[in-house]
Image 1 (tube, rainbow, N blue to C red):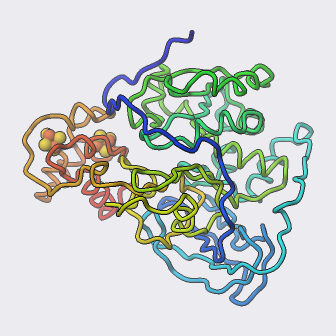
Image 2 (image 1 turned 135 degrees about the vertical axis):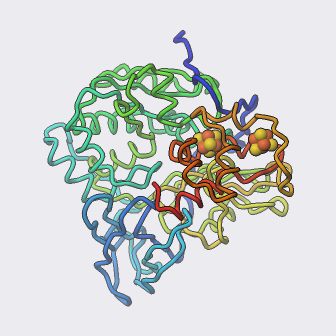
Image 3 (image 1 turned 90 degrees about the vertical axis):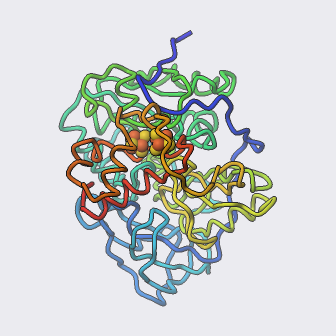
Length: 431
Ligand code: SF4
Ligand code: SF4
């Protein structure tokens, strides 16, 4: 048995995982309208539209072209007609243009036997070109994968971690993909390794994942070329932070480690082997206010309300709808909010799950300090921001904060620590 690794400090111990009542993945219904955002994260650059209103588009047709670094091509998730190109608020809380397509006409990919290209004869540059062309983005950052892998290739020998750890106890997509698409994850990893040339590949998995559900993946690992090693991690949320994984694996320089999620590897595999653009995303729809929680394979641009309806709708009035998760997620604006390439969970949480209560004064319990994986004192940063002492807030670690959400999650006074940190950084233009 491989010894599970643990994080040096911080994090929140949650002794139970939220049970996933529906274990298998289902294809979500096709949306009647898809709102496709042209920028996947605050740090990304918007793609430039190449279609016009009224134009007919095929499934998988290019809607917007990448504009330089940090920008990714965007493709139509459904066949149809472009109805609008408009400015919208993305689920991540920033503004971007989006192309709205209404479903019409025949599908060119759905229902057809996928093509299978033999990628092993391709060189690095050809593979990077396909990944760029198909608009594959990292599902965790929203940044174009081809840029990241090509940059990594200039400093070979780093540790690549297939990160199947989760941010919070609700999410299950990444570990589920290990059992559902084992060969695609392993092959996707081999393709990424061909471009980026890591020195070592480790697959990071929560120690509580039942070994029997990993059996197919472990069998696939035996055939992996280059070799990949399975490493278990003790459960402490948020579990998926690259800096914490680097410290736990004793990688001396955090920059010498690169994490990539199984969902990104599956999208990469589909692009290179099946010529398929990034038009689908695996989304965990759950939380106590959803009747039948499930993992759905949804088309990009589908309204989150459609996915909740497909899971039987609400079992009661949700206190809050969160995209992402209770630690680092954001409240959804409404049920029309679209799925993007970085939407990994939609949670409808009950009052007892959100622990919402009016904000109260700090009681100096120190729990935020204990929970911070970066070793910061969140309340001191917060206090200085509240009285306008930005310089002191920066000196005490504002920029080292990864917005992991652990401090706000444990705060018994319900002080919105992370929201205040994020707002202060955005106001000052700090990344
Ligand atoms: S959000 Fe920032 S300050 Fe709070 S626990 Fe995470 S890293 Fe620390
Ligand atoms: S957890 Fe909340 S109440 Fe406790 S010290 Fe931190 S900010 Fe204050």
